Every structure is written in C-alpha cells, then in structure tokens.
Image (cartoon, rainbow over all chains, first blue to last red; front, side):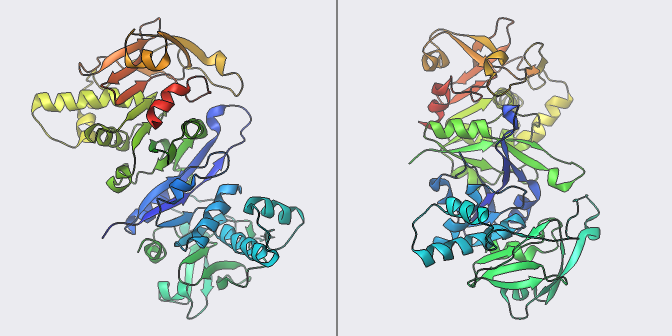
Length: 233
Length: 231
C-alpha cells in the first residue's frame, strides 16, 4: 500500500530584525521521525508571506500541525483546509490550540454567513478578547525539553472512556510530556474534549474519527506511537 | 500549476534540548522560488535519509546552503541526476554537487557500488581532495536586511556557458557567505564562474545541473537563476 504523505506545519520566525538568514521555518526532527516510524512520509509545508501554496497542501493525505510559540496565518489555513477537505488532521500543543480556534472560526463564519479570510476573522475576535480564540493561561504545565529527562515532565491525562483517544490508547489515562503556558478555553460545540489533566486543563480534542488535537507532546519520547499510527494509517 | 521544488535545508542536530534538533528552511529560498512560480516543499530527512516517495513528488531539487552536510544532501543530488530532474545547489548545495560527481567518479574508477554516504565518509577520512574542501578567505560575509550589496562580490562567468546565458552577461554581482570551496573538481563538471581570487563559484553539468557558491536567493537581483529551476 502506498505510504501516506503527511504535511507537517512547523513554527517559524518571519520578522527577525537583522540578519536575513534568520527568517526561517523550523521543523523539529522528532515530529518527522514519529511520522516515519508510524509508516507515513513527512513533507514540510513551507509558507510564503504567511500562506502555504494550495498546490503543496493538495499533495498531502493528512496533516500534522506542530507545537510552537507564534501563530501565523498558515497554521489556521492548514487546519481549515484539512477540515473542509475532510483529511486527517493532528495538532500538537500550539497545533491543538490551532484546531480549537479553527473550529470556532468556521462555526462563526457559518453562523454569520460571512465570507471572509479566516486569519482576518481570527485577528478581529482576538482583538475583541473573544474566549473562542483567546487562550487561557495555565500554571505548572511548562517545562523545557531536556534530553534523557522527559520522565520529569510527564503528567497524567485522564481520557474520556469510549472516546477515540481512549480507544487508540486502549486505556483511560496516559502520561504525556507537557510544555505550554496557554490552553483552549471555550471549545467549539462540534469538538469533543476527551482528555484533561487533574486541574481541568483541556488536553485532548477530537472531531469524529479524523481530527485529533493533543495539548501534550506525544512526539517527544516515542512512547505513544498509537497516535501517529492513527494519523498515518 | 507550478513545478514542485523539493528543498534540502540546513539542520542542527544532537542538541541538548530536543526541540533544538531542527531542519531550518530559510525564508529567502522559499520566497524567491515562489516569486518565480515554483511551489517549494520541505524535504525532511529521518536519521539523515529521505523517503524516496517524497523525492518522487518533486519536479526539481534545490539544495540550500548551510553548515551541516548529511546523507540526505547526496541522496537528493543522486535522485535528481539519475532521474534527469533539474538540480540546483547553493553554497553548501554547490559543494554537494561537486562532491557527488567526484564520489560517483571514484566509485566508477574503483568499480565499486556502495552507499554514496559511506563512500563519501571513506574518501573524507582519507583526506581525498575531491571531497575535502579548500579553505577560502574573504568570502564569509554576514548578510543584513537592506544591506545585501555590502556582502557582494563579482563573479566572472565563462562566455558561452549556461550561467552566462541565463545571466545575460559574463559578470554578476552576488552575496557571498562561505569559508570553504570546491577543489579538484570532477572532469564531468564545468567550472563556469570564478571570483578574482580563483575560487570556484559556478559548476554546471549538461543543462540540468547548476551549482553556485554565491547566494542568488538573498535579494531579488538574480531572479533568472531561480527561474531556471522553476521552468
């Protein structure tokens, strides 16, 4: 069977003040490694002026939106592309938050019937402080990723029995590495929150059987291969 | 539809923080290719190697500059050359083309068929000048936004060469940002551009392979070179 091509959306710096060569897209090696271990083929999606060429998105069978610190139009663009084209979509950390925002934004566009660019709508709601796109602040979830010390930064995520993620993992709880300061607040009614930490933080989002967001980092250790196998199957 | 251009990027690996193990795609390359109608995609190696499935999707290959030379560099060059796809190498990418031809020549001379990277390692460990680069002085400039011209030098092109034809003249001015250069170039490659100090600046093979030691992607003054790859 032909291997699935997974479009990887990375974080990037596009506004460095001085040296031109410092503007770049950064693909962390561990995401592509997990895709390959799961039988998929990673393909790096490269934005130009904030957007990924549609022709590049069309090459992919599924998408992985990686973690990062800054939001750019291309992350939302890819999430919305996957959702509207019904292609498997996984988001990790900022990628999970991107899925959360994309559903809320698509909901809002459907509600108002407004035909607009998703990024402009996002900026408008963000500037208005709308909790559907403004993230909540969380404490105690941020840790640096030091090699060989991942066990120190795992926390327990409680999964909803019968949810997709619980079925994939074959259990109602997992230990995931955590490294974030923000999380989803007002989640779209179309999404299911199927995992939380003890403090109530949204850790897993799912939509039917083809969209999955995790606030934790399954790519770090290779201890949660089921999630990547789901994306690449 | 634009041509799909597969990019081999710089990387930094084996850092203390796992998130710092990264493949870094400089925005300049992406932007210039797109401006010429190409659709750039990022080639992401795993343990140094690329999946052939994703190379197959590419109409052409661009090997970018950088400091980290990996098996994926030679693999991408090999894919392009053996499939007759346009191949462009910039800076380290130019040196990749140089090394690739020499490695293949050496294997043919010895009558061996081996993994290209393993053979490269052997040649390098033996200090073979066909893969060990020459140190150059005065070519390693920092390129700052809006001050690209300050990091440029003149490159003299061989009249009648492919690059002279693309450039529409026997001389060009381009950003330079390297400490090493090709020496002992394969007899199959043509050196069609040099700086005044004799440094190898342009390598060509037929009409499908072009390596430039300078950086045409830093600004929009040499669009014809990147256009060649996207056509």
